[in-house]
Length: 283
Image 1 (tube, rainbow, N blue to C red):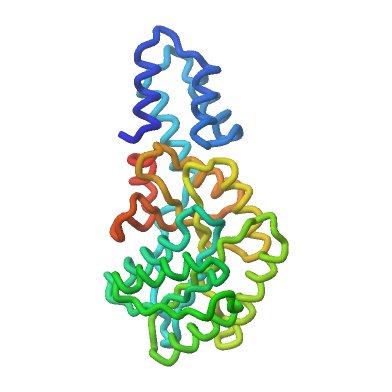
Image 2: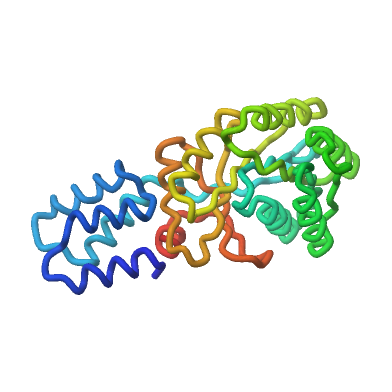
């Protein structure tokens, strides 16, 4: 059982009577938000009897499952043979570059060919990091000169992916601060540039959010969604936080589903989202 439910179980089991205020605070602290927490508390009170720890866990899990999508379909190569283009966006520190590489690894393990674009050009460390991952995982990485225009890096990487008939192109974009308007404009420019060679691209835009940042992740999702419509989340740092509720809140409020989960540092510590497993193991 994950950290959140384990600690909840311990607190409730050792009490004669449930402390509703304490339970409400615990649920909100797990990033489920006030709205969802209120539904859970009301449902428990409606049982009309003494509440056990198992009741709390069962009702909470049911509400979580009701507010999450069914298992999402993995990205698939396009029937026309052109690359399926994935933009990976997010603020610095969420694990964005590592997640881009892990996603590439996840796809290559399933027999797909992948090209990665190091479009976080203003941070030399990010380009070097993606290159190291590419070397380690045997995935080609396209990069530009230091401080090169990120959209031109994506354009050239797209050209190469088309020429080599790669199944997927993953663009690791700059770690934008969601409050910086000019950087959001840059993201819009990347989308326009990629569309020049394939008007249907990009095909998937994924926001990387850190499960431990709580409400900040919600604000990031709102801002990025305005600048570049999001198709899903990569939720990182689920390996010890006992959290993950923010993914439910973002889906509940913005209809942006979790698609992949990062659970550690190693390349294989990355999985596609499965609802029942997520509710059971992560929260």
